[in-house]
Image (cartoon, rainbow, N blue to C red):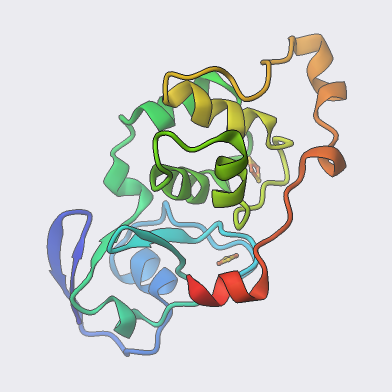
Amino acid sequence: MRFTLNGKPVELKVAPMRRLLDVLREDCGLTGTKEGCGEGECGACTVLLDGAPVNSCLVPVAQAEGTKVTTIEGLRGHTKLQQAFVTEGGAQCGICTPGFLLAASTLPRAASLEAVKQGLAGNLCRCTGYAGIYRSVAVARGGARAAPKPKPAARAKATPRAKTKPKARSAAARRSR
Ligand code: FES
Ligand code: FES
């Protein structure tokens, strides 16, 4: 199996139907890609395949043949987006964060808040209430904050999950990724 991983060519002897997620973590040692649900629902395992976000738990490694694969390690920790997730409360436990960062990195710069929510709808977070994530994306783009940063005392009340949690990707949308 040959593909380009974070800008470097790799050649692996692996069974073609193994999950790309497992090959990245176990054979390539890139453990930044996380497993949440393992069935295409949460987006924690998101990587980019030729620049498009995919759920790597659903992708056989055979589909990566000849492609460019980008994992969170490929962002190298220095992008504005990553900095904004740190400063704006876009990450808490961090399990969902690599997937959010990679999905957000593909959004057009001029995307509206609605388009950002749409683009990130396949990534689920149990911790942040989403406001911090949307704010991080807005700040990374140098635009206005999508939601005001809560004061520490108000934060607990300001992040009711039921009010801000977007719908998961539809089954059709997941199949198309
Ligand atoms: S682990 Fe792949 S979508 Fe949840
Ligand atoms: S920061 Fe914990 S699941 Fe998103």
